[in-house]
Length: 190
Image 1 (tube, rainbow, N blue to C red):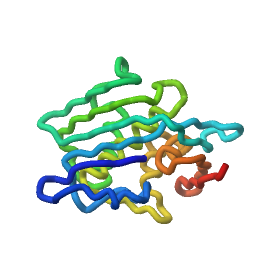
Image 2: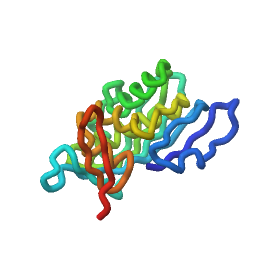
Image 3: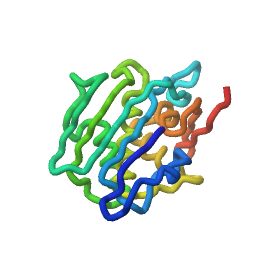
């Protein structure tokens, strides 16, 4: 996952060092805009139905900006069929992030550049969900618990229903996930 963005006008410039650890999302500072790149994924590998997935080198890019009115612009995969309202999975991800922060979602402009093939089993829904959550967290400046909780994974898996695609979209590599009171995932070295 790659990130860039702009602080709110009163906060200065963006510090990329905040984002060295991919799952340490959030900052106490709100931003006016953010760009997030999230990889496509392949899941259900071998006997790992709904629990094993891997990140691919194909990326969706999402830019979200504070705006005077709600707007969605889509370019690339799915542009003719993806919803351009709050039912879009990117918007659902942003909503979950703002809900976690206890903040109302302001009017936003969503600019989606989709390279992950839509409805082809390559994790386009997970890329949308994860990019929306991460963008929402960054825009509202909210941090989630990481160590021992993996709150970002929990939120994404709750929307998606299982971790097989969202875990590699968040953490990269080949991931195996299971549920025991909460979702757990572990990177598998190959």
